[in-house]
Length: 143
Length: 143
DNA sequence: CTAAGTGCAAACACTTTGCACTTAA
DNA sequence: TTAAGTGCAAAGTGTTTGCACTTAG
Image 1 (spheres, chains in turn orange, cyan, purple, red):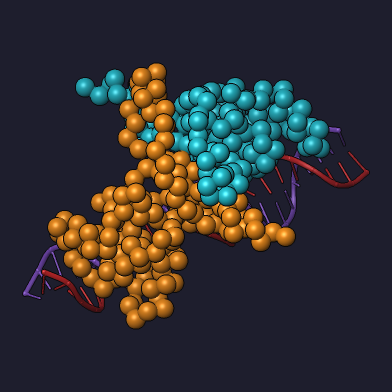
Image 2 (spheres, rainbow over the protein chains, first blue to last red):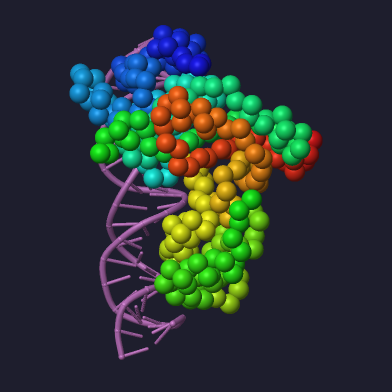
């Protein structure tokens, strides 16, 4: 689990020369605090409830900056909005196809990396592993 | 490797009550013949070169039908068009971030499925595993 | 003070849809 | 013959961009 705190994200952006605006702080606060994997729109709605004025465009800008600085990860889905993950270490995402919740599953995977590198001469730079299915909450409330 | 032939796809659609139009045949022919993972647009351009008249909408319709019937798989990417995979058995996709090529890597994975089911009570219905990196061709021609 | 950032609305890219025309069975 | 399928163009979705206004440093 490699996850940056609010402080670390702010520090990293400042060091890279980015200004600390109310909007950026609000987005960072939101993404670093929540343990679910919110979408840009969810973050937008949440920030709007508070005092800070913000637009969706700014949220996308800020999230893209964080992704670019490798402080968070972007998860894309065809059937829905992109979601953002503070866990930047490769891990398994358990995605509920009923309620859309995403949780992390951390496990050391004997992920066949070496075998791929040798057999295919493919240079792995990143990976993405998802299990789709029904989460505990949803399977319990089916009656 | 579980991969349906052109014949099997045609049979499955006919049995499900679908009509066999020139357009559907052309799409099925294209997807079942090619071993790469074409996008709707690529299939469109390819079919246009031949005698069959077709539109992009029809290609999407047909591909969606095939996906729905579980005869092919859809791979979605935020940064590009969806790609379609005839290998419907769960497997690893090796995706080249330089040229966009996608190849399959078949391997029996000790994929932690059991552990997830037990530890998280998550009912797995499908999964998606991707390794992103540089393919053989691209790494050779880098000089 | 001034370059960086914000925020609206318009643009974008891919995919889906409404509907008149065509066609497989 | 006729319901299913096609194909255009228009709508829809999530995301990005252009540009005048605002603001952090």
